[in-house]
Image 1 (cartoon, rainbow, N blue to C red):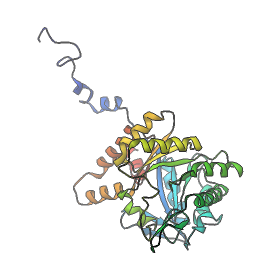
Image 2 (cartoon, rainbow, N blue to C red):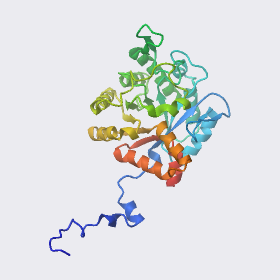
Image 3 (cartoon, rainbow, N blue to C red):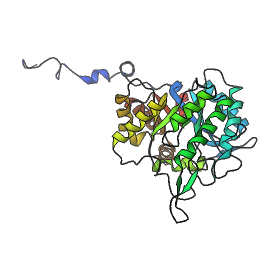
Image 4 (cartoon, helix red, strand yellow):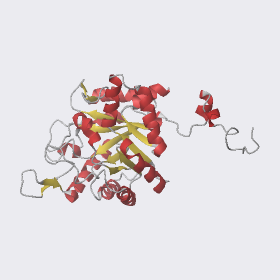
Length: 340
């Protein structure tokens, strides 16, 4: 050994000592996945005994309420933290009336689940209108030009309806609401609506930094929510926008009363997750591992190109390592079983 060798340099320092044994690797990990930090998105539709496979998302289904109850009982036993409900109504209209009705599809699903799950299991509702409107956009439309497709979402008119939707879900027993429409002022309006109706204890998990992403494609089949014209770029964030805009969106939502913030999608925006964690260190941070991320991995695994289990665990670890303490993922059941 050379006299010039310093402690902390090779060969005295060999970082492979921390890798040679599986037990050592386990002890020195900073990021540990746990099913109780997962939320499983689920799609509920009318009917009885309905379990419709979602073609673009192998292993995922549209479920009638009775099938949803069976599914959630199994999910609860796996130790998963909760479920996020998306509704597919019997009928759709221009304003998404089913979403605001106390007997709408999600409101009835919430009631059914709260009758069977334990008090520690979270039933969370997505708060938006894209699944409920006949045009597929996230709120009330207004004319903004002479052409047939020159329509946009009326931000302020939509706020009043978001409050109605949230209160209907709260009356059904929801544990948490998750507004996803990216309307300016939606968190403040929803917070006031909940508080004024006696639901001040219900937390809000805001899709605070939600991007107009191409990774949502399979979800639109799952939720039957594809826009009938145009796209959602006038209200969801531009993927190429400066990260500071995302931080401002989060800051505004926190000021309006958001209890948890979310970045969506997860993988293409790990930098935003990390930035949000550093900027708001005391705020619970969620990330949505979205349908496109799920479907691409499923397709590659089906072709034998990757090991699905190892890729999924690495993916979710990267999301948590970036700073998300809560992960919405369609793999929640699989990962809970793999980690058992």
